[in-house]
Image (cartoon, rainbow, N blue to C red; front, side):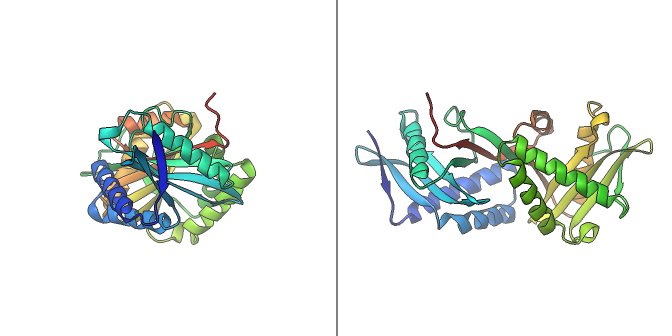
Length: 304
């Protein structure tokens, strides 16, 4: 019978958790410094997590970690970790731990529950909607420009229209993924853009591109260099709707990879929002690995 014991001392779990994360980051192509920076961010949160041993007949078979916190004015739960040792996998402990986590978070006032997956979870979280993926690829040499697409710096005249379009697209991505309501998404968009690019085009370590072919603008790009050590984060590589389906998406990614190397970084990372299957397929075909996947459900969760 699967049982749960909340730990007073979670040091052993913390060590195991960080080892697993470090291995996953390395497998996805992050360097040691970038992996350590991500682990630092995780450590900043884990102090607030409630960690329980998963046991069977008194034997520890894994761990589950949960937390409930304010999220845009509402309580939301999170499964920070759910791990069953390989020797005991497939015996129902995983589902029991998921059910326990859902019940614990609901009892503590959460009306939504999320999980950050760092490796495939099989069917265990199939009922949880995919809200977004973090994908990364190491870039070793500058790719050749594709399909005659060129990239140039964005001008100050072009910036206001681009900013308005990016903020609207960001709101749309959040709402389509089911992460927030339209009103909450607008507030989040305003906050995030004000924090990320407070100086507009002059914000340090950011590249803003206009993508063209035969002198016609077909898209834009926005990249943040050194987001992690050696890693450029691609906030946006956008192809205008009337120019999609012509192979320009891959060309835009090539432009982003060239900008990554030009800035001295060796990996390019993107977030893909849930519901954007076209982008997910494109990144998969281009070799971008899923390093993290956010999923969530509303509580209480019925499996009937």
